[in-house]
Length: 122
Image (cartoon, helix red, strand yellow):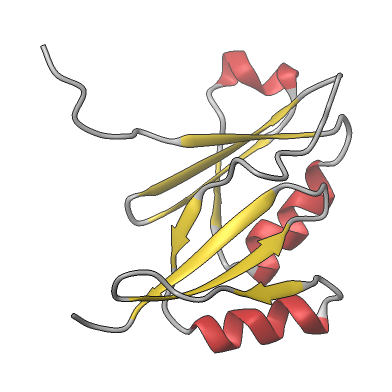
């Protein structure tokens, strides 16, 4: 027996906020929306995938944003992504960097924290 990977990460969003999620995760971050399985559509939410990344946004009727716990998303073009977020009105804070990565933090429209990591070499 072994646990060997992560299939997907799920973040909660408030009810009826799928269009706002599509705008942020799809248009600003550039992730591709994927259809949910038919038996899950009625629950709401939206799923995104990009390469190996699978990010599911699920509706929580008692929504509370994840302001500390967060996914660390690997990105290319961190400066462009920071600019896109700021132009759209989202606050970005620049991290001190870790290991071989530049780092920034963003909050989605719902207050969920995202860590953005760009590899800069060994």
